[in-house]
Length: 549
Image (cartoon, rainbow, N blue to C red):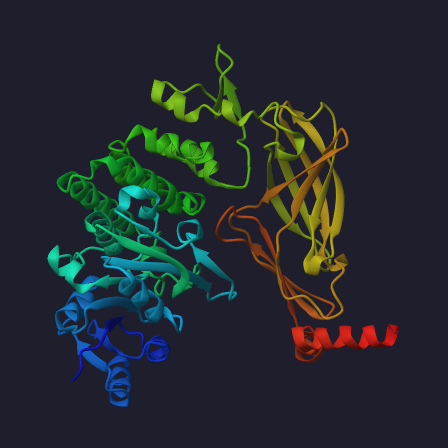
């Protein structure tokens, strides 16, 4: 048999349903001289039968079945490496795909000049709503060839092994293989590849299609989405220690601050967004696991974080765990603290006291947020629903509390408005916030969702109410946080099934879901979608233009 140009390894475990899709994406490649190794980590479902059927259909496909399950990605990849016959290697997970020209594009980069690996853009596809986005787009925005990772240490954020095509000679020269017996193996493997490579090329075209199921059930979620497991935290911290040791041993300690910043900004940040949903025991164990590692990070890595994230990190390190849970709500959305405290020098700190240590004061000092002087539209308030009561029909009564930590609002009652816009049609509900004490207001709003004006073709989607304040002719619109758990409310409104529920993730807002039913779902919406197609819209515009003449 002639030597194929590229070997694409497809690793799989108990994924008979999606394996065919992954393999077919490789068979469709515009560069056809390749081999496909299906490396099965001893599946117990129909995966072996599917793999054998695919191998019988195409002589380029080889089926490798491990004698026992390894519990990870490394062993099936390494075993496939042992039998791969090509000078260039790629890796694909069975739940993902390759764009049709991925192999052609990456192989062309290798043939242009001698490089150790080529990498391209990763297209993320959310399986719950089909939305597409580019993973780390700023890192793959333009074509470039780098002489080592020091030329752009930000690439440590792009730690996927599947977005790259490696020269077999490069991997063999450094005996570079996936670390076995650990999770998050991609992070260590990619850090090693970046540091050991003398030259690598980045292309902006998509070379990998990553299907993401962010809200999958815990038993089916990917390893990276099993953040509720403390073992997951332990594994992630363990691999960071391994990367740190490699950087020291290989003479790349100059990258340590960049790598530490990546851990804080990416790895720790993923857990931080989930903290509001964790109980006290979990938070205590989490702090026990991460704090010793946080203590080893370079000071400059913390300084590069946004202030709100630095606050959460420090509250964890100071074991102020209930406050860390509060601070984590609304990260990245300009949600303010409930209270702030000033010291004798006029510095402002998160929370109800001045921190004790010099380091804690530096990290919890939020003076740079300029809460008292920033423009009113970007002011930081904190709006919380404290009670939800079901009213008649599709209405709910909300008890709302607004925290104004910088005392931006004048003394006295404030006019406020709830906003929600299903289908782009805004429903406004005005109510009053009354002062309880300086910096705290409370009020009640009656939100009748049955009064929302929906499009004639119906609306299928989710919306979250916002809260708007007015002051001196300026308006401020902010998130409205809800109780993290409350009984789901369901009812019917014209042609729709309506659900009011906890958001269940992210900030934890009040979530309202509309689902068309009856004639609207079966006839009106499908007709509207057909009429909304670009070809139909162009035809309508042409007819309208002709009628005007």
